[in-house]
Image (cartoon, rainbow, N blue to C red; front, top):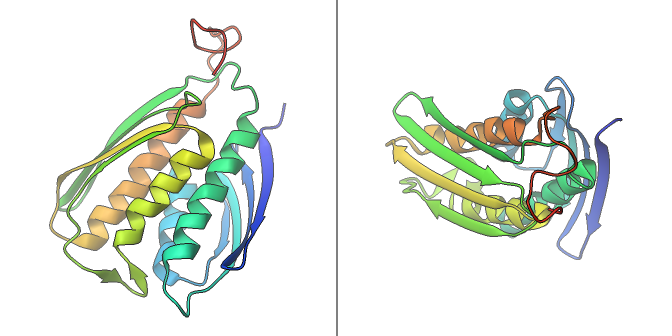
Length: 195
């Protein structure tokens, strides 16, 4: 059964469409209007092996905030839709990813409950035209849109580009592990019988 989804969200601030295939090869086509953000989402798709198409028209003349946060929400919703009842998935994923000076831990549980923890120091205020404080907003929106418990912790790093890129790739690798089907699982991986 194909695990694919399309989601769209349109507000006065952003118009976002996402197409996602959980069982892809890492193909991507991303245009958010923010170059650095595109680069991060391309890495997310490639390293998570998710086929991902994202188109965003946002109020980037104001700043990057609405575009980045709302894209996180819609991407989370696309994952939720593609996962359906979450039958057979491993549910949990974690990854510690090095990128030069940076070392980032991502751990998550696709539980249906939203919790988000973020511990990082990002020395640069901007990367390209993207304010680095929006990185936290993206991942919080992503966790909220999916209904996921997500922890991101910077273990080392001094270069902001490397730290942020390690975050996106670590979360992608953890997501790849969590959405994988495990033939040993009957129904969902929960004593409650639902996620």
